Image (cartoon, rainbow, N blue to C red; front, side):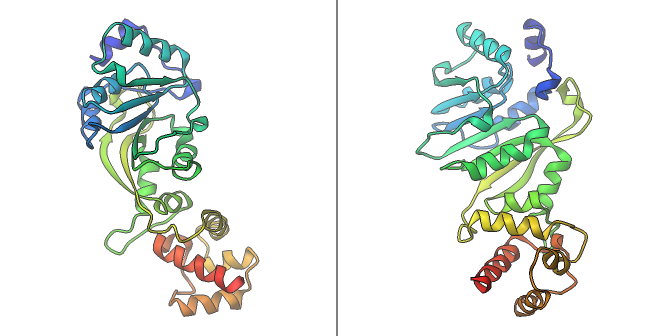
Length: 278
């Protein structure tokens, strides 16, 4: 079905937009089946020619907002609407806009489903998690597997964690887990990397800590990720004895590296630093 559409509309992927179209119908269906869509506000980022859009509409969302930067894809989507290709097409709202300039106005909870250019994964995550007045309840994002793995390694499991700046800024706002592995052969054209679908679910566990204070501290702490945390903080201008004293109070090993602390420990540590400096 998806390949038929590519042939019908003589679709060619644009490298400048990082386009790789998912063409495996079973995987597309699995994405659409991941969570309850009926009666929900859904934002689909990067719908392309509507392969996933079609399956989402069959789930009868309250509203399906399509964010598509490529004008040619917008014309194909409009053509498919006019041709009656989509069930529940009256639920569709197409916006020909850069997703980083899109600010949803939903008062109710909403979900985001995205097949995005891999080179803007971090900016899009930051946009939906930090830039909006109301962030999505859930996000389902198809991304480069290596990046997804890095995010998930920051989610503590069996007492083990490997944090990074990326994993921490995600973990402050939501949980993350891989839902589907997507091999490169499932795309047109095939990318050079493997992919995975990651499910992000919002929480407010760490809202007690100001986002800017959190970001500023984490960036300083990870300036040299493989170095000892105490040395990175000293280079950032903190008195070494002051740092050692807080570490002792919190029972943190002086030899610990930034990647060894989980999100809970980071937020608690930053809060203590901030209290002792004010």
